[in-house]
Amino acid sequence: MTDQPRLDQNPTAPAPLSSSSASAAPGVLPQFTDPPSSRRRRRYAIAGTGHRAGMYVGALTGEHADVGELVAWLDPNPARMAWYDGEAGRALGLPGAAGLPQYGPDGLETMLGEQAVDVLIVTSVDRTHAELVDRALRAGADVIVEKPLTTDVEGCRLISRAIAETGRDVIVTFNYRYAPRNSTLRQVIDSGVIGDVTGVHFEWVLDTVHGADYFRRWHRDKANSGGLLVHKASHHFDLVNWWIADEPVRVFASGGLRFYGDKNAAERGQSDRPDRGTGTSGGPFSLDLRADPRLDALYLQAEHHDGYRRDQDPFAPGVTIEDNMAVLVDYRRGATLTYSLNAHSPWEGYRVSVNGTAGRAELTVVERGFVQLDDQGNAVLDPSASEVDAPPDDVRPERDTLVVQRHWQRPEEVRIPDGIGGHGGGDAILLMEAFRRDLLVAPDPLRRAADYADGLRAVAVGIAANQSLVTGQPVHIADLDLNARGDGRIA
Image 1 (spheres, one colour):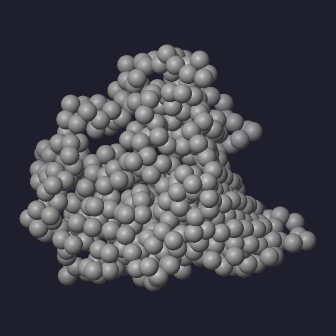
Image 2: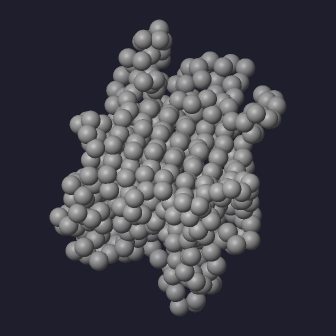
Image 3: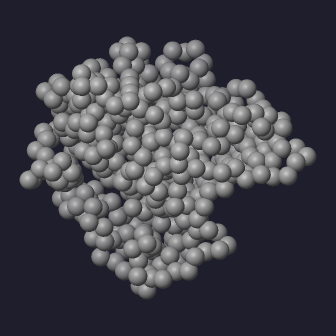
């Protein structure tokens, strides 16, 4: 299990070299035994058939079909379910669609019972996660849920109560833990080479292709996504929690909508814009769904069922999320995190600096060094498939660099091994642990698999940050009572 196809990811996200390797370096992949003949394949259903579901569909009709099988779809949009059913049929070598049963959201419990579902995979709109997780657990299924676990305090409490009362299992898919660049930093910190961690500085920048995409989709409404401090930054807060093996306790945040949205466009004299990207040309902020067969099928051809437009102009009215954010987080054992997120950068990637009592580690990741435009002025989503010949960027090349420097010593670069699949080489490894964890030869020394408690700790920072944005005051996470027990702990 070392050669892997590239699995589905958002077409506007960068696809750097760290996501393109088909073979992992030695030691990167966990070791698994073959499933015994007595092991029954687990039965999976998918709730939410947008583009993110493709990663799981591909896994269960391909690499992991020997240990799991797809048995049903659940979504309010029949066109999206039908498209994935066709894809599943092709992947399984069937003469037509897979013919799996399709259910609407009100039919969740019926689906779980009729199809004897073992595990529900939740890839739906963020605001629906808590209800779906709660209902699935109480109906007797385990859950794999895409990040974020949920978007608000009430959702955290709902899931916490359901887990406490049912004893069932929830996996949160934090794929960035599995990216070798991030797991290598964890190894450096664990080794003690930089001493005890005193502080972390984490800067993440989204470019004007990937960043703009959050302002086109349902994410632009904070009621749906919790804003980028929950939807996107929960990845990043989880990394810090995991890197330093500590729990956040106090959060202060500042930020606002300063680039996208209709008011900002008007102030820059750019108010005369189309309301959607499909059918327009010559605009680097426009996305034409017809240019991507999958987006065309999943969204443009499905609009008549629910009215959802995936290609809204990022400067159209209705944006209620922030595009510039800064957060200060205190941790239980004394470390401090300073974090920033910008969604309209000319390049995409992140920088992490970890200061310790014996030195410093610095991780720099360039996922896309610049946004390339075609001859009509449209942003190029996949430069490798473009006829536009762009020379390599020597100033900001796409690469991952990890440097460690101890006090009174020269800096040293730490080699980062190759991963496989999207999200920095982490997606494929995450899927192995999600579907084969009972077949692991030995426990993962890096403890990369995330449970519901890790999901709570990650969204706790974003939820507290959102509250701080409103009040202008620091927020003590214990005061949020996220676990619904009143004991001051997160999970």
